[in-house]
Image (cartoon, rainbow, N blue to C red; front, side, top):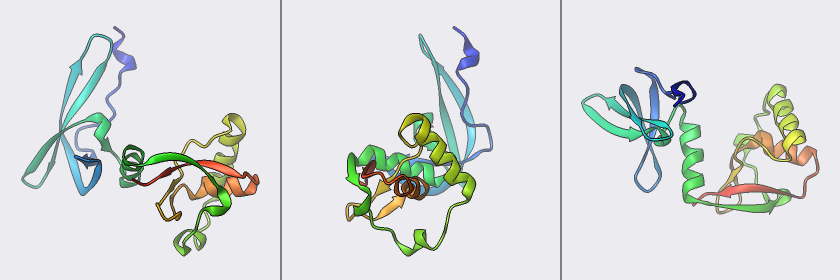
Amino acid sequence: MNESKYKNKFDLEDNVYTLKLKWVVDEDVYNVSAIKPEIETEKTTYRYTLSKNEKTIDRAEMNIFKSIKKAKSECAKRNGKEADIEVSKIKITSAFSNNIPKSELITKRLEEYKKTEKFNTDIIVSKNGYLVDGYSAYLVAKMLDLNTIKVLIEG
C-alpha cells in the first residue's frame, strides 16, 4: 500500500467546523487536538478529536471542514436535492447583487465551464428560489446565456 497517496486533510491545532447528526452545521469553531489514522485494506482514513473549551468530540474527516461555507455546502448536498432549474427563475438578494465577485473568480468559473461544461462549485438555492451560494457560477451562467443549470435545493 502506498501510504503517501492518503494524506491527512487537517493538522493539529487547525480550526475547523463540523456537522452534527441530521446534517446540521455546528456553528462552534473547534480546534483539532488529536489525529488517529484508521488503516483499512485499501486506504487510510482519519478520525479527529476536536476540542473547544472543555468540550471534546470525535469526528470522521468527511464531517470536518476548514470553513463554515464548505460545511454549509456539504449540508445542503446531504439534506437537499439536485435539480436543473432555469437560470432566470433564480432570485438574487441585495447581499449578492451589491457585491460583485473579483474578476479572477469570474474568469476561473468561465474557464472551468468551458473545459467541463459544469462548475466546480455548488450553486445552492433555497426552497423559495433564492440563491444561497454560488454567485460567481450563477453570473457566468447568465453571461453564457445558459437556460438551465444544476443546483442544490436546500433540504
